[in-house]
Image (cartoon, rainbow, N blue to C red; front, top):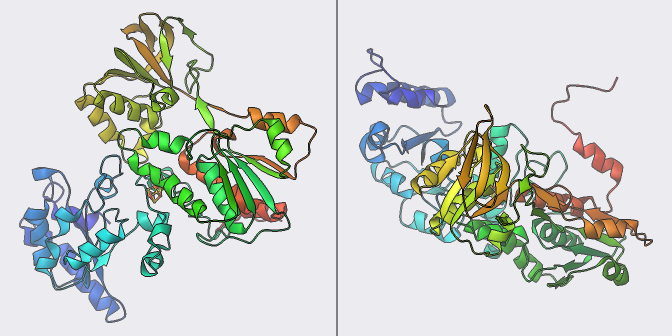
Length: 512
Ligand code: SF4
């Protein structure tokens, strides 16, 4: 609730009565709300007060060591519990990309316990049990607040209590959960595919039904979908064979985690690989690029194909549905090439018609590495989708500060040997931008060759299912969800599964 907080701030509160003017007057509404809430609830429950002690705007807002502290001193003993944080939401729920440290709010809130005898709780993407313990032991807080870490692993407290630290599914600080809120859709989490599906689909975050009559499954592709599918099938008790064409497990995850600011994303695969290493009923084969004949020869009747997707280099994306004209002398690269370590020379133009996150990440990554970067996009801002994860202003600010030359509202028309011809999306006014190479961040193509070959083979499989990016390129969270769903639904009654999909808390249309 922002209204009481706005009463505290002179930039919102211009009242001249006893609720405006001095800090004491501006805090009067909060004082009265706390006192009257106490009166109303009596001793039936405690009254907690969440207060953002710092707005991270310097002298333009509330500061922890100025009026933020004064408010806590003034109301020190009124709440039964102080729940303190920073604002706004983008600062409170910072992503690891821009705030890599656990407990990043501590410098702002650590004074609170010195000025009240009431218990204090704080947040700050606290995922490390050692950090949690240290905050309590050092007298910074009495309780640990964990919203995102509990979304990623609702059994976090129990795992800590039981010493099962290695089993914690650690939040990666990506804010996909936040994006669901901003988009008004059911919550999704990159690490925890069961979140929001506990009631509708009956998915427990830790438990999964034991296997049915089938014994064996083969999962091809160890990206986020393949790893999650393997882990859940193994938990169900099947003998699972996981075949990965590459040298490393994780697919796109370790590649993206190698880019600037995304290191924490590696936790997605670390958690799953660790889990699989503990299981006797899983066999993992790396550098195993299976053909359709290989798969048929293996004779495993249930096959899940998670062969991923790759970035296209022909310019087809959201705005341009036909391949664009590209001169053969120009170097055309994709995010896959950069993540594979391909070196760059001279000025690079990143054309971002994907408009989600990877274009902005690459621009910052390459500028940080010392490259001269030009960023062009048909969108009106850099990485517009990341408004949903509360990151967009920081992304654009960083690119400006790193001297990236940004061209918004521009589509790519042709590429010649000296650079790119862009056109204004409103007027079609052309402009030529000189560059030495172009990175196309436009659209991904599904890798379905193996699936297609098996589909038309004479062998009939009990299960042959395409999952993850190979079925529908999306976020890492989508791939994890797809892998989880495939494992959950395996050997399930299809009618029951279909009913789960349409289960709603509030039924607005009834069958007549
Ligand atoms: S979506 Fe990302 S930030 Fe949100 S809880 Fe899951 S891992 Fe953490």
